[in-house]
Length: 458
Image (tube, rainbow, N blue to C red; front, side, top):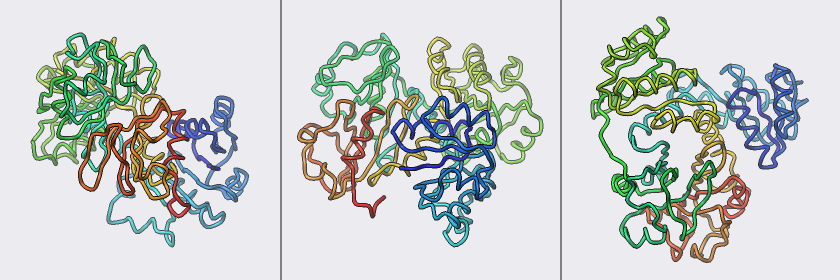
């Protein structure tokens, strides 16, 4: 597939890295020559220097025979123009635009993106995606990572195993015997920095980070089995009142369980904007690293502190300080994946990776087959793919035992009609079923082949 990626910021870079790693023909476009040079040297991509909204620059990037344009510059308006030019002049079939401004994403204006108006096939909003990820972390406080699948009926949980976990040194096959009614499957294990799909005889050890696919009704029991508490979050402190922090605070205000939230923001103008936008939430103007400000926010009584500024290092330090001052839990927004290994030593409970979140939302619209959802795990090491099985798929009409899945692929859950079932080797996959698969990055192309459909669905 030939893809043009406009903008080499965090989102553009990560998408280019992901798609070029899967042997797609990728060209990046940016008006910053140094950024283009870095991308072409570090990744298997071609580069064009210039303004991506200019027709001659897009033509130079190969727009006449491109399958897709992803507009991910820092300007909403430039991204819109890129899609318009790609459609009107070059007839690019698929156009994805990143739009940050809430007004552009307002549901009552969605007619704007029809082909006869502003031809954008998919609108993505990193800020909204990350805000939703933060809310999911709050909903599953014992998990360092979490994502919903199968219309909210299945939940992926990332759990760090400690010495007090009762099922350590137990083969996974035996776990199924011990908890035969538990609708949950361990689909991934990270041990000593290496992520892999476990086999039935593998055991779990203290220090492992595991990914479990659980039926939504069994999430609480899954936490208990793996030694995690499920304390309800009632008091939350948010550090950072930018777009993400404000979205999270507004979402918490709308919830019926009345979570009490306080917001800390060091920029006065942003603090005032947040105070005007929020009704019940207290907004404090101050530094989230200042002990006096944290004390004013009653951080020692907080069930969770969300550190959502635009600076990774500030988020890490604020999380550490909040825990030191007595907060029960700290969650940090971290863009740089190389900082994630510091979470354990710093005693930070969970993190949100904006790049992985945004990459996941884009991959959902790139994958072949009737793919409904994609979630990127770690530093693009694996994916959880939710897809509907169609009649042309090699999966249809066969049991899981009969399907030749690669070693790095496990079926986490199967939805038949309205019912979500825990898969076993004898589970038959039928046309119309929706499956959630864990796949190591190297095995994603083979998963796509297994999900292949006619060109009408691409």
